[in-house]
Length: 129
Image (spheres, helix red, strand yellow):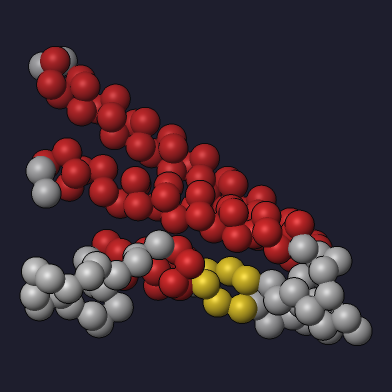
């Protein structure tokens, strides 16, 4: 990893994860009336720490002929336990999903602002100002 990656890594990882989480949460809202649909989410903190540490879910490639593992968000999706169950088996709770989506959107905006600030600081440092 070069020095730029070291400076920006946490913020870019957070942005990717928040974008993926937004898709999962939007899918929950879109399927709020689908019979049998189970609300999904990720444990952001645990997954973020795992990605920053470089952990690969305990699997290591020990031979160059081994295939790589899919490290996308889909491998870490969990099912949410609802406060109340619907008769059709759907576990999506509209207000909770909207609150989670809004919180995620605010965190995404904050990550963008932090990243912009870091880039601005790096540009000033490179210019010698």
